Image 1 (tube, rainbow, N blue to C red):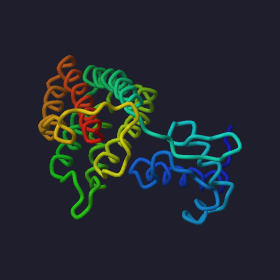
Image 2 (tube, rainbow, N blue to C red):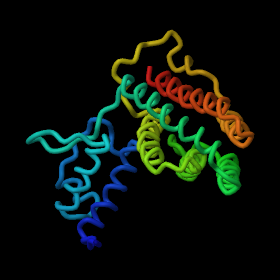
Image 3 (cartoon, rainbow, N blue to C red):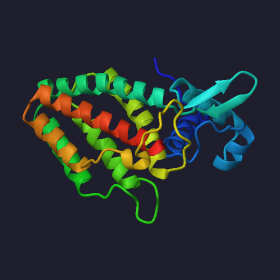
Length: 238
């Protein structure tokens, strides 16, 4: 049986994607109210698709629906980031191990190509405090390629959601506009306590292990990569 997609549902899908992107990139700040009328004016849409878009985002954790009080952007916290990180490690490391086990030459080619593109792009946007949109797209494509041979649409779907949640924290830390995540402890070094990293080298090591079909090493490197990002975000928030 087929069902027709109404214009309002199509609009809601597009709108949800735009709102989600603005939340991830920090344009809509954590904890901020989301008044329907103001959002309709901002995105030039009517109230019906806007409410549907916000309801969809509430189911994925980007927006909070409050009884009789409308919607607000979900807040951030150190505890939530740690939880997201560990969940992402469980999901993506398992998906990576399956990709190494099951992925063929096509998977290897996609992974090598995604890594090559990412390695040629600067992370930070010139003249802006934020992450380069081109690098961000390439980074997402790289991590998607890593697990693209796992053969499980549900692992991929869960990985995408957790990846977007992690990206939200990363963007906020780079922008430097967030308040410190709740529950974070002050360190002696402040911003200087962030661990030194060579992210391109981390990506290269993960790719090398994956293409060498070394499940254990690839999974360990990917988990360390995720935890290092979390430590850096928390260090910048202190």
